[in-house]
Image 1 (cartoon, rainbow, N blue to C red):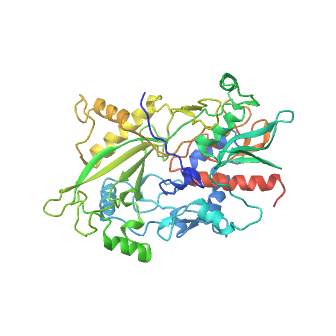
Image 2 (image 1 turned 90 degrees about the vertical axis):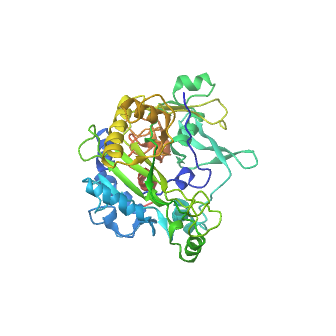
Image 3 (image 1 turned 45 degrees about the horizontal axis):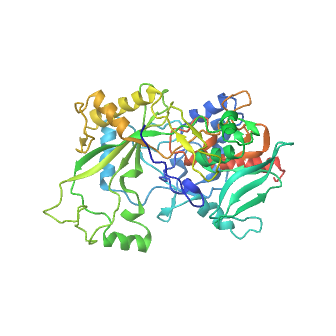
Length: 475
């Protein structure tokens, strides 16, 4: 009965412009599993060159052990932050001493271990797809981007089962219709895309009929909703918590885009781990860390502490957070319409931990890695509960109380063949039964990759672009 926050980006690129910037493709086995489910053309070997179309890596070896198969570099810079806190090296050294791989980048079939993550950044700043793809071609005559507008539904001709445009509400609240000659491409994300389809009459027939929405296709839109799910574990290290956003740091960033403000602190470190339930070599847990993030200080002086005081009134410990995260979740939720008003937000039921395996995997790795191996000192701000600290019951309670959904929602317009009753789009990303509506975002993932999904989302976009050009003989 609890409530979790799912932030969504109201900007060009949407939520894809506010993610954590960490760039990992995910293990190839995930994509091979997609292909084994009957999705032709979606095995890792068949899609890896679409990743390459995206990537402009400063060092290609951080992403793949294989030579690039295409000469042209992509538009998304992939590189490390120009700054990292000293504790990053301490953490990686500890992981190495515990036997985890830390000396080479985590990539492809060698994903298990701890590492500083490559990021989608350029010149010390976040790089988004609009910056990389749209800005260089903003003056094209065949490109128009309408902002401050919300698409409410796709318009479909019932006698031919084809889309002929979209309806939207503009910034002044007026309804407008934009017609299409060829097809409608839906890229509104794992929440937005099913929401638009349901309002368009594409979805579960019974649910739509109850709301008086004319049904064009009875498909399981909104089903198969899943997300990576974590638990926040507060802890502390012996370190005077000086502010990192000093006047010197601000000046350094303004001058050359380096220094503490050019990174997100400890969040650049991540670990991929395998529980006893994992397929050998395929991590099912990812650990994120929070700490050393620049925050506004009162004075900007070098020796100011995070409590606004100076020595000797500074604390002697710095607070951090570890977030072990299940990245192979088996719990499934769904998304439904709240009403037949397309401007009403949808009803979202994530159903976290309804499959108990997700809970058991998280408990196992939390106890083994965070508590037993790293021996981290926990910060005393756990919820007041009646269980003894460190017991399974204690951690189960913390997991349920501190559930932290990652912003990796997926699966609501599932990719699959027509023989799959849970599928919404075919291997060409077209809606089953309506050939000129295509979906190209995280909603099509049958299973979300076991990593930050932004790399896979951009891969899908590149593959979709190629499909569209092939369909209309544009290449």
